[in-house]
Image (cartoon, rainbow, N blue to C red; front, side, top):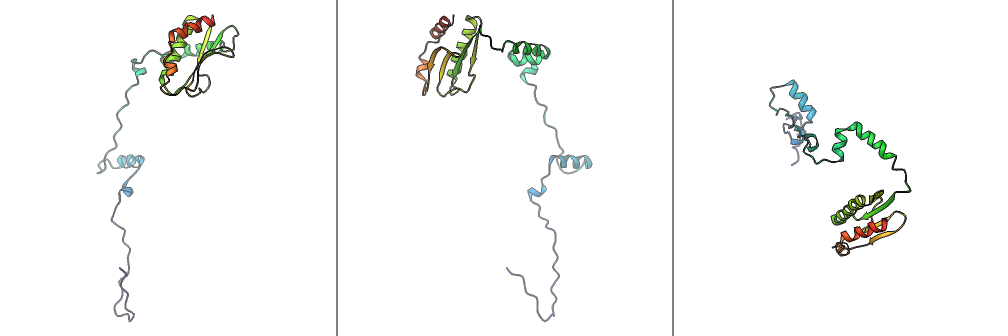
Amino acid sequence: MPPKKSKADGEEKAKPLTTLASSRVTRSMDSRTRSQTQQNGAKAAGSATKPVTKKAKRKNSAIETGRAKKGKKEEEVEEPEEAVEEEVEKEEPEVEDPTRTKIVIEHCKQCNAFKTRAIQVKEALEGAVPGVTVSLNPEKPRRGCFEIREEGGQTFISLLEMKRPFAPMKALDMEEVIEDIIKKVK
């Protein structure tokens, strides 16, 4: 609706327009940052706003309470000086030793069945054959791949481009596969 026109003859003067601050307050105008509320809370302790409460203290992690499974991380946390010494010792054997046999297990990350079989083979080989180094996925693995090979040499088992449900890999008898690899490595 348009505003009323003032009369031209000047008999009645128009009321002067005054702008009043709007008393309407929206939620966005009322919001404040945490630091602003803390400052206001410190200045006016008895104000109507909610007092800032501290969050509940975070529970200790399993490692701190001693409930975690014994693993590498916990050993490093408990004994940092010894861990540094062990790291120095580990760096020396990493230099390529021609007498050690290196075996690479490449397993797809698509399904945990690959991972469990790869770990099973790794543990069995390290336990049965002295002086063998087994590495899992030193490079990005191929999709649907489960391959066990000697680095730069013989391939023991190679299952490539498998589709779900990974029947060729699940049909393997892992005990026999591990025995065959141990015989070939020795």
